[in-house]
Amino acid sequence: MDDVEADDFPVDERTHRELLKSPVNLQEWTDDKGIPTEIYFLKSNRKCLKRIRDAMLLHNWQEAAVYYNSYIQALEARNCIKVHPTASEITWRIGTEILHHLPNATAEDFNAVYEQLKNNGVKNFTKICLEHCFHLLLNGQMEEAKRQLSVGESWRYGNFSIAQGDTKKLIRAYSGFLDYLNWCEKKSSTAGSDEASRNQEMHSYFRYASVALKDIISQPGVWDPFVLSYINMLEFYNDEDGALQILENYAYNKEFPINPNAHLYLYQFLKRHNAPDDRLIGALRVLRSLVPSHELMLDLCSLLLGTSLMSDLEEALTVSMDLLEFSSWKSDMKAWSCLLNIIKLLKRKKRKEIVLKEWEARRSLWFSFHFRIHFARKDMVENVKLLQIKSDVLKVLGERFLEYRRYTANLKRIAESKTDECPFREMLKKRRKEKMEEKKKMEEEKKRLEKKKKMEEEKKKMEKEKKRLEKKKKMEKKRLEKKKKMEEKKKMEKEKKRLEKKKKMEKKRLEKKKKMKEKKRLEKKKKMKEKKKM
Image 1 (cartoon, one colour):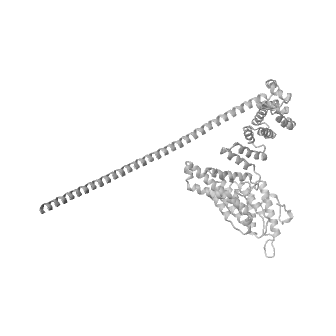
Image 2: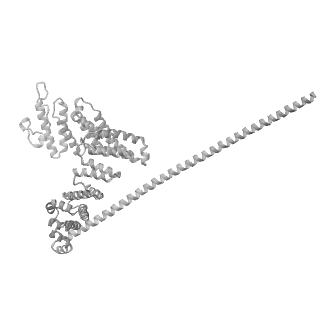
Image 3: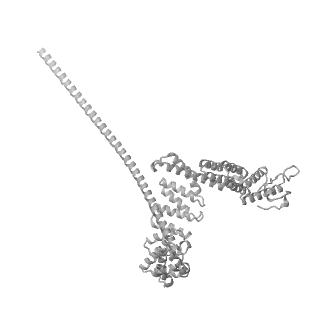
Protein backbone atom coordinates (compact mmCIF):
# COMPACT_ATOMS: atom_id res chain seq x y z
CA MET A 1 0.00 0.00 0.00
CA ASP A 2 1.35 3.39 -0.98
CA ASP A 3 1.94 6.04 1.65
CA VAL A 4 0.09 9.32 1.14
CA GLU A 5 1.62 12.69 1.90
CA ALA A 6 0.05 14.78 4.67
CA ASP A 7 -0.90 17.63 2.32
CA ASP A 8 -3.06 15.28 0.21
CA PHE A 9 -5.78 15.62 2.85
CA PRO A 10 -7.00 18.83 4.51
CA VAL A 11 -6.98 17.27 7.99
CA ASP A 12 -5.53 18.88 11.09
CA GLU A 13 -3.06 16.25 12.29
CA ARG A 14 -2.41 17.34 15.86
CA THR A 15 -1.03 14.13 17.27
CA HIS A 16 -0.52 10.59 16.03
CA ARG A 17 -3.13 9.29 18.46
CA GLU A 18 -5.72 11.84 17.34
CA LEU A 19 -5.02 10.92 13.72
CA LEU A 20 -5.68 7.25 14.41
CA LYS A 21 -8.86 7.99 16.34
CA SER A 22 -10.27 10.49 13.87
CA PRO A 23 -12.97 9.15 11.50
CA VAL A 24 -12.16 8.53 7.84
CA ASN A 25 -14.24 11.05 5.89
CA LEU A 26 -15.07 9.47 2.52
CA GLN A 27 -17.63 12.10 1.44
CA GLU A 28 -15.44 15.22 1.78
CA TRP A 29 -14.37 15.61 -1.87
CA THR A 30 -17.33 15.55 -4.25
CA ASP A 31 -18.13 16.60 -7.81
CA ASP A 32 -21.01 18.86 -8.96
CA LYS A 33 -23.56 16.12 -8.32
CA GLY A 34 -22.33 15.52 -4.76
CA ILE A 35 -20.68 12.18 -5.62
CA PRO A 36 -17.12 11.64 -4.34
CA THR A 37 -14.61 11.87 -7.16
CA GLU A 38 -12.68 8.74 -7.95
CA ILE A 39 -9.18 10.09 -7.27
CA TYR A 40 -10.08 11.36 -3.80
CA PHE A 41 -12.00 8.18 -3.08
CA LEU A 42 -8.86 6.16 -3.82
CA LYS A 43 -6.68 8.51 -1.75
CA SER A 44 -9.10 8.27 1.15
CA ASN A 45 -9.07 4.48 0.99
CA ARG A 46 -5.28 4.45 0.89
CA LYS A 47 -5.26 6.57 4.01
CA CYS A 48 -7.65 4.15 5.69
CA LEU A 49 -5.49 1.19 4.68
CA LYS A 50 -2.41 2.96 6.06
CA ARG A 51 -4.14 3.35 9.41
CA ILE A 52 -5.18 -0.31 9.36
CA ARG A 53 -1.58 -1.27 8.65
CA ASP A 54 -0.23 0.91 11.48
CA ALA A 55 -2.76 -0.54 13.93
CA MET A 56 -1.89 -4.09 12.90
CA LEU A 57 1.85 -3.48 13.25
CA LEU A 58 1.23 -2.15 16.77
CA HIS A 59 -1.11 -5.10 17.47
CA ASN A 60 -4.01 -2.74 18.14
CA TRP A 61 -6.49 -5.25 16.76
CA GLN A 62 -9.61 -3.55 18.08
CA GLU A 63 -8.63 -0.28 16.44
CA ALA A 64 -7.74 -2.09 13.20
CA ALA A 65 -11.19 -3.71 13.23
CA VAL A 66 -12.90 -0.29 13.45
CA TYR A 67 -10.95 1.07 10.48
CA TYR A 68 -11.48 -2.16 8.56
CA ASN A 69 -15.23 -1.85 9.05
CA SER A 70 -15.11 1.69 7.62
CA TYR A 71 -13.05 0.48 4.69
CA ILE A 72 -15.51 -2.30 3.86
CA GLN A 73 -18.47 0.09 4.02
CA ALA A 74 -16.64 2.44 1.65
CA LEU A 75 -16.10 -0.35 -0.85
CA GLU A 76 -19.78 -1.28 -0.67
CA ALA A 77 -20.78 2.33 -1.26
CA ARG A 78 -18.51 2.66 -4.31
CA ASN A 79 -18.68 -0.80 -5.87
CA CYS A 80 -18.60 0.62 -9.40
CA ILE A 81 -14.89 1.55 -9.24
CA LYS A 82 -12.60 -0.92 -10.99
CA VAL A 83 -9.97 -2.18 -8.58
CA HIS A 84 -6.84 -4.21 -9.11
CA PRO A 85 -7.53 -7.99 -9.27
CA THR A 86 -5.53 -8.57 -6.07
CA ALA A 87 -7.25 -5.76 -4.12
CA SER A 88 -10.22 -7.89 -3.04
CA GLU A 89 -7.85 -10.66 -1.92
CA ILE A 90 -5.81 -8.16 0.13
CA THR A 91 -9.03 -6.94 1.77
CA TRP A 92 -10.12 -10.48 2.53
CA ARG A 93 -6.71 -11.48 3.96
CA ILE A 94 -6.56 -8.37 6.18
CA GLY A 95 -10.05 -9.03 7.53
CA THR A 96 -9.38 -12.65 8.44
CA GLU A 97 -6.05 -11.73 10.05
CA ILE A 98 -7.72 -9.10 12.25
CA LEU A 99 -10.50 -11.49 13.25
CA HIS A 100 -8.04 -14.22 14.19
CA HIS A 101 -6.32 -11.85 16.63
CA LEU A 102 -9.44 -10.31 18.18
CA PRO A 103 -9.90 -11.93 21.62
CA ASN A 104 -13.68 -11.57 21.66
CA ALA A 105 -14.34 -12.68 18.06
CA THR A 106 -17.04 -15.37 17.78
CA ALA A 107 -17.88 -17.92 15.11
CA GLU A 108 -20.80 -15.72 14.04
CA ASP A 109 -18.40 -12.81 13.46
CA PHE A 110 -16.26 -14.97 11.19
CA ASN A 111 -19.26 -16.19 9.22
CA ALA A 112 -20.61 -12.65 8.84
CA VAL A 113 -17.27 -11.29 7.60
CA TYR A 114 -16.80 -14.17 5.16
CA GLU A 115 -20.30 -13.64 3.72
CA GLN A 116 -19.65 -9.89 3.39
CA LEU A 117 -16.31 -10.50 1.68
CA LYS A 118 -17.91 -12.91 -0.80
CA ASN A 119 -20.32 -10.18 -1.92
CA ASN A 120 -17.59 -7.53 -2.22
CA GLY A 121 -14.93 -9.77 -3.75
CA VAL A 122 -16.61 -11.75 -6.50
CA LYS A 123 -13.22 -12.11 -8.18
CA ASN A 124 -12.20 -14.35 -5.26
CA PHE A 125 -15.60 -15.83 -4.39
CA THR A 126 -14.53 -19.47 -4.71
CA LYS A 127 -11.25 -18.89 -2.84
CA ILE A 128 -13.13 -17.26 0.03
CA CYS A 129 -15.60 -20.18 0.09
CA LEU A 130 -12.67 -22.59 0.28
CA GLU A 131 -10.96 -20.70 3.12
CA HIS A 132 -14.30 -20.37 4.93
CA CYS A 133 -14.58 -24.15 4.65
CA PHE A 134 -11.11 -24.61 6.21
CA HIS A 135 -12.05 -22.29 9.08
CA LEU A 136 -15.24 -24.27 9.74
CA LEU A 137 -13.36 -27.56 9.66
CA LEU A 138 -10.88 -26.27 12.25
CA ASN A 139 -13.88 -25.54 14.48
CA GLY A 140 -15.40 -28.99 13.90
CA GLN A 141 -18.33 -27.82 11.76
CA MET A 142 -18.10 -30.41 8.99
CA GLU A 143 -21.70 -30.15 7.80
CA GLU A 144 -21.47 -26.37 7.47
CA ALA A 145 -18.10 -26.72 5.70
CA LYS A 146 -19.71 -29.11 3.22
CA ARG A 147 -22.51 -26.59 2.64
CA GLN A 148 -19.99 -23.81 1.93
CA LEU A 149 -18.25 -26.00 -0.65
CA SER A 150 -21.62 -26.70 -2.30
CA VAL A 151 -22.26 -22.93 -2.46
CA GLY A 152 -18.87 -22.31 -4.05
CA GLU A 153 -19.34 -25.14 -6.55
CA SER A 154 -22.80 -24.00 -7.68
CA TRP A 155 -21.91 -20.26 -7.82
CA ARG A 156 -22.38 -18.57 -11.20
CA TYR A 157 -21.49 -14.95 -12.03
CA GLY A 158 -20.78 -14.58 -15.73
CA ASN A 159 -17.12 -14.40 -16.72
CA PHE A 160 -16.03 -14.17 -13.07
CA SER A 161 -17.17 -17.74 -12.37
CA ILE A 162 -15.53 -18.98 -15.61
CA ALA A 163 -12.21 -17.38 -14.60
CA GLN A 164 -12.34 -19.26 -11.27
CA GLY A 165 -12.71 -22.68 -12.91
CA ASP A 166 -9.48 -24.06 -11.42
CA THR A 167 -10.55 -23.13 -7.91
CA LYS A 168 -13.92 -24.79 -8.55
CA LYS A 169 -12.10 -28.01 -9.40
CA LEU A 170 -10.29 -27.73 -6.10
CA ILE A 171 -13.60 -27.16 -4.32
CA ARG A 172 -15.03 -30.33 -5.89
CA ALA A 173 -11.92 -32.20 -4.76
CA TYR A 174 -12.26 -30.98 -1.17
CA SER A 175 -15.94 -31.84 -1.27
CA GLY A 176 -14.92 -35.38 -2.14
CA PHE A 177 -12.32 -35.27 0.62
CA LEU A 178 -15.03 -34.40 3.16
CA ASP A 179 -17.04 -37.38 1.88
CA TYR A 180 -13.92 -39.47 2.48
CA LEU A 181 -13.71 -38.17 6.08
CA ASN A 182 -17.36 -39.15 6.57
CA TRP A 183 -16.55 -42.56 5.09
CA CYS A 184 -13.68 -42.97 7.58
CA GLU A 185 -16.00 -42.03 10.44
CA LYS A 186 -18.59 -44.60 9.32
CA LYS A 187 -15.89 -47.23 8.89
CA SER A 188 -14.52 -46.73 12.41
CA SER A 189 -18.03 -46.88 13.90
CA THR A 190 -18.75 -50.36 12.48
CA ALA A 191 -17.74 -53.55 14.28
CA GLY A 192 -15.84 -55.31 11.50
CA SER A 193 -14.87 -55.06 7.85
CA ASP A 194 -17.64 -57.45 6.72
CA GLU A 195 -20.31 -55.40 8.45
CA ALA A 196 -18.77 -52.16 7.16
CA SER A 197 -18.82 -53.38 3.57
CA ARG A 198 -22.56 -54.00 3.89
CA ASN A 199 -23.21 -50.56 5.29
CA GLN A 200 -25.12 -48.76 2.55
CA GLU A 201 -24.56 -45.26 3.95
CA MET A 202 -20.83 -45.85 4.08
CA HIS A 203 -20.81 -47.18 0.52
CA SER A 204 -22.69 -44.11 -0.71
CA TYR A 205 -19.99 -41.87 0.82
CA PHE A 206 -17.41 -44.00 -0.98
CA ARG A 207 -19.15 -43.45 -4.33
CA TYR A 208 -19.42 -39.66 -3.83
CA ALA A 209 -15.79 -39.37 -2.68
CA SER A 210 -14.36 -41.66 -5.38
CA VAL A 211 -16.02 -39.70 -8.21
CA ALA A 212 -14.62 -36.35 -7.00
CA LEU A 213 -11.17 -37.66 -6.01
CA LYS A 214 -10.69 -39.70 -9.17
CA ASP A 215 -11.57 -36.65 -11.25
CA ILE A 216 -9.01 -34.36 -9.58
CA ILE A 217 -6.11 -36.86 -9.43
CA SER A 218 -6.51 -37.66 -13.13
CA GLN A 219 -5.47 -34.06 -13.90
CA PRO A 220 -1.79 -32.98 -13.74
CA GLY A 221 -0.86 -31.57 -10.34
CA VAL A 222 0.35 -32.42 -6.83
CA TRP A 223 -2.61 -34.12 -5.10
CA ASP A 224 -0.98 -36.05 -2.22
CA PRO A 225 -3.86 -35.97 0.34
CA PHE A 226 -6.44 -36.81 -2.33
CA VAL A 227 -4.37 -39.69 -3.72
CA LEU A 228 -3.80 -41.19 -0.26
CA SER A 229 -7.52 -40.93 0.55
CA TYR A 230 -8.58 -42.61 -2.68
CA ILE A 231 -5.98 -45.38 -2.29
CA ASN A 232 -7.11 -46.03 1.28
CA MET A 233 -10.69 -46.59 0.10
CA LEU A 234 -9.66 -48.80 -2.82
CA GLU A 235 -7.52 -50.95 -0.53
CA PHE A 236 -10.43 -51.32 1.89
CA TYR A 237 -12.61 -52.68 -0.92
CA ASN A 238 -9.72 -54.96 -2.10
CA ASP A 239 -9.28 -53.16 -5.43
CA GLU A 240 -5.50 -53.49 -5.38
CA ASP A 241 -5.13 -53.38 -9.17
CA GLY A 242 -7.05 -50.10 -9.37
CA ALA A 243 -4.97 -48.60 -6.53
CA LEU A 244 -1.72 -49.68 -8.19
CA GLN A 245 -2.80 -48.17 -11.51
CA ILE A 246 -3.60 -44.84 -9.81
CA LEU A 247 -0.23 -44.74 -8.02
CA GLU A 248 1.77 -45.68 -11.11
CA ASN A 249 0.02 -43.00 -13.16
CA TYR A 250 0.65 -40.45 -10.37
CA ALA A 251 4.34 -41.37 -10.21
CA TYR A 252 5.28 -41.99 -13.86
CA ASN A 253 2.93 -39.82 -15.94
CA LYS A 254 5.16 -37.23 -17.66
CA GLU A 255 2.35 -34.66 -17.73
CA PHE A 256 2.41 -34.51 -13.92
CA PRO A 257 4.99 -32.34 -12.09
CA ILE A 258 7.94 -34.10 -10.46
CA ASN A 259 6.83 -35.28 -7.02
CA PRO A 260 9.05 -37.49 -4.80
CA ASN A 261 6.05 -38.34 -2.60
CA ALA A 262 4.39 -40.09 -5.56
CA HIS A 263 7.25 -42.63 -5.69
CA LEU A 264 7.26 -42.89 -1.89
CA TYR A 265 3.54 -43.80 -1.86
CA LEU A 266 4.07 -46.32 -4.67
CA TYR A 267 6.93 -47.98 -2.76
CA GLN A 268 4.91 -48.14 0.48
CA PHE A 269 1.96 -49.66 -1.40
CA LEU A 270 4.16 -52.29 -3.07
CA LYS A 271 5.79 -53.13 0.26
CA ARG A 272 2.39 -53.49 1.98
CA HIS A 273 1.29 -55.98 -0.67
CA ASN A 274 4.53 -58.03 -0.69
CA ALA A 275 5.66 -57.05 -4.17
CA PRO A 276 8.87 -58.66 -5.53
CA ASP A 277 12.19 -57.00 -4.65
CA ASP A 278 12.91 -55.86 -8.20
CA ARG A 279 9.76 -53.68 -8.20
CA LEU A 280 10.65 -52.21 -4.81
CA ILE A 281 14.19 -51.48 -6.01
CA GLY A 282 12.82 -49.81 -9.17
CA ALA A 283 10.58 -47.50 -7.14
CA LEU A 284 13.42 -46.56 -4.76
CA ARG A 285 15.85 -45.92 -7.61
CA VAL A 286 13.51 -43.29 -9.04
CA LEU A 287 13.09 -41.80 -5.56
CA ARG A 288 16.87 -41.66 -5.19
CA SER A 289 17.22 -39.75 -8.46
CA LEU A 290 14.91 -37.10 -6.97
CA VAL A 291 15.91 -37.16 -3.26
CA PRO A 292 19.27 -38.91 -2.79
CA SER A 293 19.25 -38.11 0.94
CA HIS A 294 15.88 -39.78 1.61
CA GLU A 295 15.70 -42.06 4.66
CA LEU A 296 14.54 -44.97 2.47
CA MET A 297 17.97 -45.11 0.82
CA LEU A 298 19.03 -47.47 3.62
CA ASP A 299 16.16 -49.74 2.55
CA LEU A 300 17.45 -49.52 -1.02
CA CYS A 301 20.90 -50.63 0.16
CA SER A 302 19.38 -53.59 2.04
CA LEU A 303 17.36 -54.64 -1.02
CA LEU A 304 20.40 -54.33 -3.32
CA LEU A 305 22.49 -56.46 -0.94
CA GLY A 306 19.77 -59.12 -1.02
CA THR A 307 19.99 -59.67 -4.80
CA SER A 308 23.52 -61.18 -4.69
CA LEU A 309 24.38 -59.43 -7.98
CA MET A 310 27.74 -57.68 -8.19
CA SER A 311 26.29 -54.70 -10.07
CA ASP A 312 23.71 -54.22 -7.30
CA LEU A 313 26.44 -54.49 -4.66
CA GLU A 314 28.41 -51.75 -6.43
CA GLU A 315 25.27 -49.62 -6.59
CA ALA A 316 24.69 -50.16 -2.84
CA LEU A 317 28.22 -48.85 -2.17
CA THR A 318 27.55 -45.71 -4.24
CA VAL A 319 24.17 -45.14 -2.57
CA SER A 320 25.58 -45.46 0.97
CA MET A 321 28.54 -43.17 0.24
CA ASP A 322 26.30 -40.59 -1.43
CA LEU A 323 24.05 -40.68 1.62
CA LEU A 324 26.92 -39.91 4.01
CA GLU A 325 27.85 -36.82 2.01
CA PHE A 326 24.73 -35.07 3.30
CA SER A 327 25.11 -33.22 6.60
CA SER A 328 21.90 -34.73 7.99
CA TRP A 329 23.43 -38.24 7.69
CA LYS A 330 27.04 -37.51 8.60
CA SER A 331 26.65 -38.77 12.21
CA ASP A 332 24.11 -41.52 11.57
CA MET A 333 25.16 -44.88 13.01
CA LYS A 334 22.98 -46.96 10.67
CA ALA A 335 24.42 -45.30 7.56
CA TRP A 336 28.04 -45.84 8.71
CA SER A 337 27.31 -49.45 9.72
CA CYS A 338 25.71 -50.07 6.32
CA LEU A 339 28.77 -48.67 4.51
CA LEU A 340 31.16 -50.74 6.64
CA ASN A 341 29.22 -53.96 5.93
CA ILE A 342 29.16 -53.27 2.17
CA ILE A 343 32.93 -52.62 2.05
CA LYS A 344 33.64 -55.80 4.03
CA LEU A 345 31.35 -57.81 1.73
CA LEU A 346 33.11 -56.47 -1.38
CA LYS A 347 36.50 -57.31 0.11
CA ARG A 348 35.34 -60.87 0.86
CA LYS A 349 34.21 -61.19 -2.76
CA LYS A 350 37.67 -59.96 -3.82
CA ARG A 351 36.36 -56.80 -5.43
CA LYS A 352 38.50 -54.39 -3.46
CA GLU A 353 39.33 -52.39 -6.61
CA ILE A 354 35.71 -51.19 -6.79
CA VAL A 355 35.95 -49.86 -3.25
CA LEU A 356 39.28 -48.16 -3.89
CA LYS A 357 38.03 -46.58 -7.12
CA GLU A 358 34.99 -45.10 -5.33
CA TRP A 359 37.14 -44.03 -2.39
CA GLU A 360 39.77 -42.25 -4.53
CA ALA A 361 37.07 -40.11 -6.13
CA ARG A 362 35.84 -38.99 -2.68
CA ARG A 363 38.98 -39.12 -0.55
CA SER A 364 39.74 -35.40 -0.31
CA LEU A 365 36.10 -34.52 0.42
CA TRP A 366 35.67 -37.20 3.09
CA PHE A 367 38.82 -36.29 5.00
CA SER A 368 37.63 -32.71 5.35
CA PHE A 369 33.97 -33.65 5.89
CA HIS A 370 34.25 -36.70 8.19
CA PHE A 371 37.77 -37.34 9.45
CA ARG A 372 39.04 -34.09 10.92
CA ILE A 373 40.67 -34.26 14.33
CA HIS A 374 38.07 -32.07 16.03
CA PHE A 375 35.36 -34.47 14.77
CA ALA A 376 37.22 -37.29 16.52
CA ARG A 377 37.38 -35.28 19.76
CA LYS A 378 33.69 -34.45 19.50
CA ASP A 379 32.70 -38.07 18.78
CA MET A 380 34.84 -39.29 21.66
CA VAL A 381 32.77 -37.13 24.02
CA GLU A 382 29.33 -37.52 22.42
CA ASN A 383 29.30 -40.82 20.52
CA VAL A 384 32.15 -43.29 21.07
CA LYS A 385 30.51 -46.01 18.92
CA LEU A 386 30.41 -43.68 15.92
CA LEU A 387 34.13 -42.91 16.38
CA GLN A 388 34.86 -46.66 16.43
CA ILE A 389 32.86 -47.36 13.25
CA LYS A 390 34.48 -44.45 11.38
CA SER A 391 37.89 -45.69 12.45
CA ASP A 392 36.99 -49.20 11.20
CA VAL A 393 35.95 -47.73 7.85
CA LEU A 394 39.35 -46.02 7.54
CA LYS A 395 41.02 -49.29 8.46
CA VAL A 396 39.22 -51.41 5.81
CA LEU A 397 39.92 -48.68 3.26
CA GLY A 398 43.63 -49.08 4.02
CA GLU A 399 44.13 -45.49 5.16
CA ARG A 400 47.00 -44.87 7.61
CA PHE A 401 45.53 -41.79 9.18
CA LEU A 402 47.13 -42.60 12.51
CA GLU A 403 46.34 -39.33 14.19
CA TYR A 404 42.60 -39.94 13.79
CA ARG A 405 42.72 -43.67 14.52
CA ARG A 406 44.86 -43.07 17.58
CA TYR A 407 41.80 -41.63 19.29
CA THR A 408 40.13 -44.99 18.91
CA ALA A 409 43.14 -47.17 19.67
CA ASN A 410 43.92 -45.29 22.89
CA LEU A 411 40.36 -44.28 23.72
CA LYS A 412 40.51 -45.40 27.33
CA ARG A 413 43.89 -43.78 28.03
CA ILE A 414 42.84 -40.47 26.41
CA ALA A 415 39.57 -40.43 28.34
CA GLU A 416 41.44 -40.92 31.63
CA SER A 417 44.06 -38.28 30.82
CA LYS A 418 41.41 -35.77 29.80
CA THR A 419 39.42 -36.21 33.01
CA ASP A 420 41.55 -33.80 35.02
CA GLU A 421 42.18 -31.38 32.17
CA CYS A 422 38.56 -30.87 31.16
CA PRO A 423 36.42 -29.38 33.95
CA PHE A 424 33.27 -30.24 32.00
CA ARG A 425 34.08 -33.96 31.67
CA GLU A 426 32.12 -35.02 34.77
CA MET A 427 29.22 -32.84 33.73
CA LEU A 428 29.23 -34.36 30.25
CA LYS A 429 29.35 -37.86 31.73
CA LYS A 430 26.46 -37.00 34.02
CA ARG A 431 24.45 -35.62 31.11
CA ARG A 432 25.25 -38.67 29.02
CA LYS A 433 24.17 -40.92 31.88
CA GLU A 434 20.94 -38.97 32.28
CA LYS A 435 20.30 -39.21 28.55
CA MET A 436 20.94 -42.96 28.66
CA GLU A 437 18.55 -43.37 31.59
CA GLU A 438 15.95 -41.24 29.87
CA LYS A 439 16.40 -43.25 26.69
CA LYS A 440 16.08 -46.47 28.67
CA LYS A 441 12.88 -45.23 30.29
CA MET A 442 11.49 -44.23 26.91
CA GLU A 443 12.36 -47.65 25.50
CA GLU A 444 10.73 -49.37 28.47
CA GLU A 445 7.65 -47.21 28.05
CA LYS A 446 7.64 -47.96 24.34
CA LYS A 447 7.93 -51.69 25.06
CA ARG A 448 5.12 -51.44 27.62
CA LEU A 449 2.89 -49.64 25.12
CA GLU A 450 3.79 -52.13 22.40
CA LYS A 451 3.02 -54.99 24.80
CA LYS A 452 -0.28 -53.36 25.71
CA LYS A 453 -1.08 -52.81 22.06
CA LYS A 454 -0.13 -56.39 21.28
CA MET A 455 -2.37 -57.65 24.09
CA GLU A 456 -5.24 -55.51 22.83
CA GLU A 457 -4.69 -56.80 19.31
CA GLU A 458 -4.55 -60.35 20.66
CA LYS A 459 -7.74 -59.73 22.60
CA LYS A 460 -9.44 -58.35 19.50
CA LYS A 461 -8.15 -61.31 17.52
CA MET A 462 -9.51 -63.72 20.13
CA GLU A 463 -12.86 -61.94 20.16
CA LYS A 464 -12.94 -62.06 16.39
CA GLU A 465 -12.04 -65.76 16.46
CA LYS A 466 -14.71 -66.34 19.10
CA LYS A 467 -17.30 -64.61 16.95
CA ARG A 468 -16.14 -66.61 13.95
CA LEU A 469 -16.47 -69.89 15.88
CA GLU A 470 -19.88 -68.90 17.21
CA LYS A 471 -20.96 -68.04 13.70
CA LYS A 472 -19.56 -71.34 12.46
CA LYS A 473 -21.33 -73.17 15.27
CA LYS A 474 -24.63 -71.50 14.40
CA MET A 475 -24.17 -72.33 10.74
CA GLU A 476 -23.35 -75.97 11.63
CA LYS A 477 -26.42 -76.16 13.85
CA LYS A 478 -28.58 -74.77 11.04
CA ARG A 479 -27.03 -77.25 8.63
CA LEU A 480 -27.76 -80.18 10.94
CA GLU A 481 -31.31 -79.01 11.51
CA LYS A 482 -31.81 -78.66 7.80
CA LYS A 483 -30.31 -82.11 7.23
CA LYS A 484 -32.57 -83.59 9.90
CA LYS A 485 -35.61 -81.99 8.34
CA MET A 486 -34.59 -83.28 4.92
CA GLU A 487 -34.16 -86.78 6.31
CA GLU A 488 -37.54 -86.65 8.05
CA LYS A 489 -39.12 -85.38 4.87
CA LYS A 490 -37.53 -88.19 2.86
CA LYS A 491 -38.66 -90.70 5.46
CA MET A 492 -42.21 -89.38 5.34
CA GLU A 493 -42.22 -89.46 1.56
CA LYS A 494 -40.87 -93.02 1.62
CA GLU A 495 -43.54 -94.07 4.10
CA LYS A 496 -46.18 -92.36 2.03
CA LYS A 497 -45.00 -94.19 -1.08
CA ARG A 498 -44.99 -97.49 0.83
CA LEU A 499 -48.55 -96.95 2.05
CA GLU A 500 -49.70 -95.97 -1.41
CA LYS A 501 -48.06 -99.07 -2.84
CA LYS A 502 -49.68 -101.24 -0.17
CA LYS A 503 -53.02 -99.64 -0.85
CA LYS A 504 -52.67 -100.30 -4.58
CA MET A 505 -51.70 -103.93 -3.96
CA GLU A 506 -54.63 -104.37 -1.58
CA LYS A 507 -56.94 -102.87 -4.16
CA LYS A 508 -55.58 -105.21 -6.85
CA ARG A 509 -55.98 -108.19 -4.54
CA LEU A 510 -59.59 -107.28 -3.77
CA GLU A 511 -60.34 -106.77 -7.45
CA LYS A 512 -58.77 -110.13 -8.26
CA LYS A 513 -60.74 -111.81 -5.47
CA LYS A 514 -63.92 -110.21 -6.70
CA LYS A 515 -63.21 -111.38 -10.23
CA MET A 516 -62.56 -114.93 -9.05
CA LYS A 517 -65.73 -114.91 -7.02
CA GLU A 518 -67.70 -113.62 -10.00
CA LYS A 519 -66.13 -116.22 -12.21
CA LYS A 520 -67.09 -119.04 -9.80
CA ARG A 521 -70.61 -117.70 -9.58
CA LEU A 522 -70.93 -117.65 -13.35
CA GLU A 523 -69.51 -121.17 -13.63
CA LYS A 524 -71.89 -122.36 -10.95
CA LYS A 525 -74.80 -120.71 -12.72
CA LYS A 526 -73.71 -122.27 -16.01
CA LYS A 527 -73.53 -125.69 -14.41
CA MET A 528 -76.99 -125.22 -12.96
CA LYS A 529 -78.39 -124.35 -16.38
CA GLU A 530 -76.77 -127.39 -17.94
CA LYS A 531 -78.15 -129.54 -15.16
CA LYS A 532 -81.67 -128.24 -15.76
CA LYS A 533 -81.44 -128.98 -19.47
CA MET A 534 -80.52 -132.49 -18.77
